[in-house]
Every structure is written in C-alpha cells, then in structure tokens.
Length: 247
Image 1: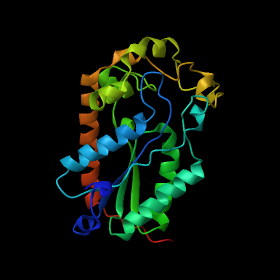
Image 2: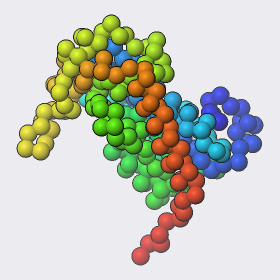
Image 3: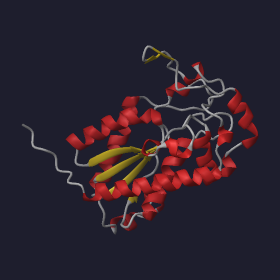
Image 4: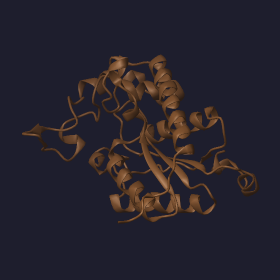
C-alpha cells in the first residue's frame, strides 16, 4: 500500500510491520536524463517489490532531495546537509514505527546518501523503537553481468529511465553527454580523491556513454533489482530484530 494514495482507514486495516521508504535525490544527470532519476529508480523498485512480495507492505512517500552538494554547479540540483537528511529519515521512520510499521527498509537510489543512511539506520536500530536497514539498488547488482559500468547518467541509469519513463529521456542529447563525460568518480592520487565537486571531472555531468544502454537493459535492471528487494523483504520479515543485551 502506498501511503500517499491511501486513506487513514485503509492504512489502519493493514496487518503488517513492514515498510519501504524510498530515498533519492534531485540532481543533474547530464543534459539527457531527468534530475529525478535517483528518486524515480528508488520509488519504482519499491513499488514493484511491494506488489511482488507475498504479503502486505507499506510504501512511504519518497524522500526526493538528498546529499548532493557535489552537483551544485549544475543548475537545478538540490541538496540538504547530512544532518538534515539523517534527521528527516530518522523522524520519518519513527512516525512509521508509531503505527506499528517498525521493520523498515530504506530503498535508496543515490550513492551520495549511502554513508548517511548506514549511520542513521544503525542509530535507529540501536536507540529507537524500530529496525531499519539501508538498501541501495545498484549495490545489489553486479554490473559485470550486464557488461556495463554504473557511471552517472550513463548507460545503466539512462536505460532504467528509458524503461519506466521514456518521455523523460532526451536521446538527441546522448552525443553531447558522452562528449563531455568524465572517466571516473573523481581525481584519485595515492588512494585519495582530490576532487569534491562533480564539475571538476565532468563537463556534461555524465560518466559513461548513455547510448550504450537501452530500454531492454533498463527492464532487466528493474526486474533484477525488484527480485533482490523482495528477497530482502522476506529476510527482514522473519529476522530476529531483538538487540543483544549490553555488557
């Protein structure tokens, strides 16, 4: 059940303790892909998994703005601080738990959110009345299986959007995206990244050539990510989430 589409009485009738909280970002993905790519992927996978899971699951509204200041040079990109993001996620999970939905998977579509989500989900589980675990969809997949790199606004993310919202992809701009693309997520020297902002290593805001993917690839990514999330739901649903006693 999607909370945003349900009435409170519909929600009250649910008999589950499982919830999905999608998180993403509103940030540039090159000249060809929408700024809502990460939020769209998290929301879509959460919805598909909730439908496929053999049981009831609450799907909370998507957190659309994340930790994305590294994209600040590209017009339209939005961001909040790590503290604000962690607080928002923690308080949202607390409100879910107050209604009995206290086993929460945070379904994430943005790499910049991952460290903060691991930290806040640990704090929730240790100190609050809920069990929370972060899950980033592209970390669950092995991109060698698809013979592509994840990139940023590259073939994988672009293919995903082509599969679920093709109207949002500007295929006529693929050449511009590839021409100004960077080679890696940063500038590395002696094991450290010297760059803090995406504009330092990518002119177009892209990593990878988006034309290397297509809607068929996107459909496969969605199917595989959905299967992975359903398997995680099954595990979380039966996991002993009691915490070890403090010694």
